Length: 416
Image 1 (cartoon, rainbow, N blue to C red):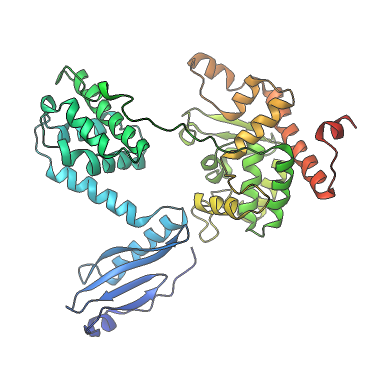
Image 2 (spheres, rainbow, N blue to C red; image 1 turned 135 degrees about the vertical axis):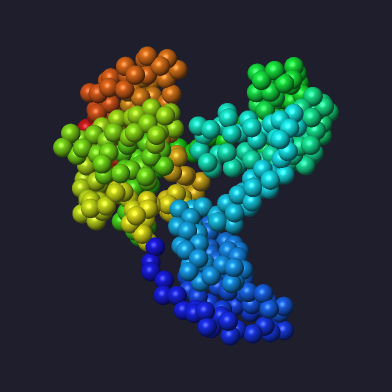
C-alpha cells in the first residue's frame, strides 16, 4: 500500500468545534474524523470495494487516539487490498462477541451448545468459515430458538425458520444443514435422541449449482490475446498466465511463495496447508511457466510472494484484483472467471487424449483412498509434465492462430 501523509494533529482535533451539521476532518487515505453537532468526534474509514463506496466506524475520539486510529486504518486498508470488506468483518466479529457474552453456562440451551459445536467440531476450519457460520446462526437461528433447551426444539420450529428464508433457497438449506449438524453433535454427546432438522431435508428446493464457464479452443485463443492487450499491471498478467499454465486454484497461485519453487527442476511444491485437499501438490512447470516466473523474479524475487500486491510487497496480490481483471477483459465471453481456467485446461487436455487419471492429478482433486493419494503424489510425473507442456504449447498455437486470423481448425493445424 502507498504511504499516507496524515495531516491531523491532536491540537487541530481538540480545537474543532461542533456546527449545526456534521462535518469531516480529513486525515488521509480515506481516514476521516466526523464531528457531530452534539460535539462527539468519531473516526471513520471511507473506502471503495468492488466498485461500491462504503465506510466503517473505527471509534470515538479521544477514546481512540490519533495513533490507534491510524493503526486500525492500516489494517482496514490491507483488508480492502485483499478484497475483504472491513465493515462486514467488523459486523461478524461483533455478532460473535455479542453471542458469546449473552450465553449462560447451560450447554442444554441451543445457542450455548451451538457455540460449543463451533469451538469443538469446527476448530480445524478457517477463522473466516467459523465467522460465517456464527453470523448465519446469529441472524437466522438464535433469535428463534437460541434460548430453547435442545430437547424443546421441534421440527415445526426449524420449518418456520427455513420457510422464512424460502426466497433465498441456498441460505435456507445452509441454515437447515447447520441446525442438523448441531444436533448430530448433541446426539453424539448423548444430550438428545432425535434431530429436528433431519425430517426437513428437501422441503426447500435448492437450484442446481452453476458450473464455471469454460472456454472453447477458439475462445481460449482470443482470451490469451486479450490478456496481453488489456493493459493491466505486469503482476496481474503474470498471475493470470500461471493460473492457466498450472491448472491450480486462484488462491494457490496468488499466495505462491518463492520458497515453494525449484526452477532448476521445473517444479512447484505447494504445501498441504495451502491446498483445498489439505495434501501437498507438486506442479511440473512448462517452459512458458518458467518464463513467467523468471520475469517475476526480476521484480519480486527478493521478497516472499511471487505475486505481491501492487501497493505493498509484504502481502500477496488480492483476489479482487484478479476478479476485476477477468471481468473487464473484452474477448467475447463476459461471464468467464478465474476458476474457469481449470475447466478450460482440463477439457482441452481430455479432448486431446490425456487420461482422466492424469487430469485429475493435475487438478488435485481429492483421492478418497488415502494410500492411493500418498502413492499418486509422485506418480505419473512424465505424463503430468507432458500434459502441462502440451497445454502451454497449445495455448501458444491457439493465440497465434487468433492473431493471424486463421480460420483453419485446430485439428487441421495440428495435422499440418
